Length: 392
Ligand code: FEO
Image 1 (cartoon, protein in one colour):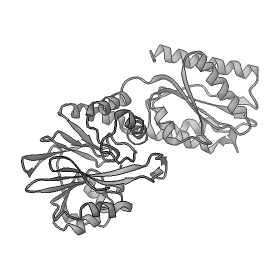
Image 2 (cartoon, helix red, strand yellow):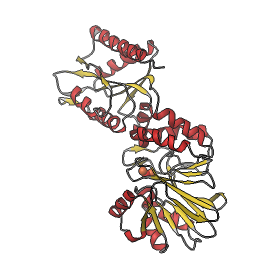
Image 3 (cartoon, protein in one colour):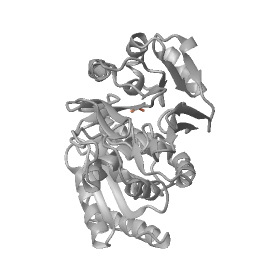
Image 4 (cartoon, protein in one colour):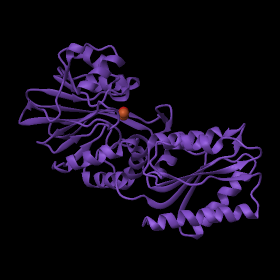
């Protein structure tokens, strides 16, 4: 796509990656994504914000073909989907100076061949006058994906260039889409990318509340012409209590664990607890992550395979352990025939969560009537814990 102007001297640039179907070799991106760059030109300076994934360098370079000089390349984040084209852009624009955090400078020079003398670090809160009555303020915000990230505030236009924060994996030809179109991709993206850092983000939201933001330009997906819906959604996702909801990632090999899951789903539903089973044979990890945002309880359900947990359930547990949702209660259930370490393995994989661990519920072979009663008790216990915590 060609670059698009959306304010006086302010342009969207970058690449829409319609075909990208997985990110970080882990998370599916069923709706593609974009790598957004932004350009501000004033009578005195030209500033490029971020570059694109190296696979799309040619797209960015064609958008820059009629630009004679770039003074600054603001690099919010060293990850290659935004910095990967830097070597080419810096070669093409030899006067351009990269502006970034000290940590970003260090990471960039380890990741790619760059002239460190052309990378200038900026302080948190530093203001840069770029002429034409415009100023930029750099705000260090570590962990709005990596430890080196920052955002840029342009007070004259009320624009926040927000790095990965407030992004979405959504390929679209529109700069702005209706909120109901971007809501799900943005929520899923939050779960996959931002959820592990929710406590830091809660603090950043307070810092950003002090700014009269008119629009948000994230590094992925469409812009937010109205900042309120995305910022309010982030407030809800990072803070507050989880919902009266149970998530059950499971695998069954011969039907025993599936029967246990089916009984638990039925009992929970009868108690008006929201319940969402995910069969890990076919579950999209992004959907699982999104559902984990507000699940008060996660029950990992696995058969016993060669003395341990099924690898697909272990994988789900590892993802949950990495993403650190605000889960309050964790449980393990499943079947076995001759023992094993399945509960311990799964509990260890989610030990990063600050959740109360429930007594494992194990069944030898196929669940019988007595086992069904134990599952009913587990459902009642979860219901009562949720009720005592005032979850809705
Ligand atoms: Fe979109 Fe963390 O890079």
